[in-house]
Length: 331
Image 1 (cartoon, rainbow, N blue to C red):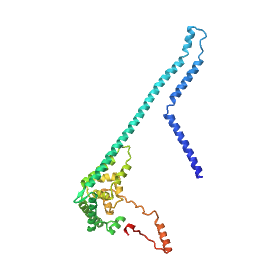
Image 2: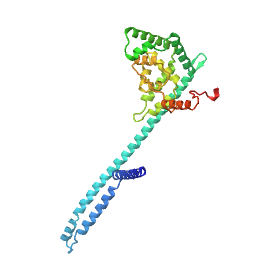
Image 3: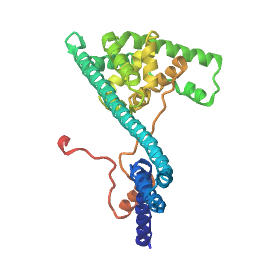
Image 4: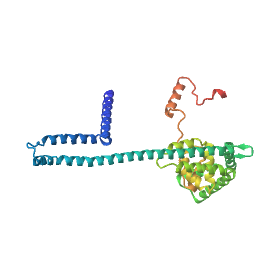
């Protein structure tokens, strides 16, 4: 039954394609000028055969016979005018073809320039990142150490997360004035510690802003930049994602960075990184931009209920089900 249905669909699809080709031929094909000439020649032949020849060789008879070709003269006049129209139509078609070719070439040139500048900026960004140095630490390690200092400072100060009682009231919308003031203190300490320990690398941040600016606003109107976004963001590690986020969070002057991170969709990418929940809340409150949490896909393509039943079956069979696995290289 399914094979019969698929065959019918294939036949209908073939018929539809043939009809579409026929319509395209009738619209775009150059079939009608020759047909018009053939019809005109046939009409001339019929008219010429229907005109009687003079029976007497007199001037009057030949004059009448010549006047009988007046209709043919009007036909040839109309054909000449039709030929002029055909010439104009052919010129118009040629001009349209040239315009399409020029437009296609222009789009390719714009795309090429956009990609060339984008890849150059990406190379400049990588080079700038590799030249970041604090003491003997260089490159991405500088950012990693800055993030480690931030985490250590927040943990040492006891402000790395919101207390349970405050978080519960926050979630239920039952905060009182004293609770709000306690949260303000948490925010203040976080801003203070992050701004102090992050060690702003202005040259790297400025380069990143230029990269995002060109990626978003340098693209031609006809170009979809989704693939370019994925390409650029794939080159940004979670260390850089979190670093730029903390810079945008703790430095009020970085308005351009926050705007570009939001408009390019970069916030959706950093939402997958290790960002503290408190910092997400602060970013939404002070900069009015929400970082949506995304569910982490399961590491095993089995439902929790199915795994639970499997454990029970293993126990019933006399075995001891295991929940973890240690790699052979570390045993």
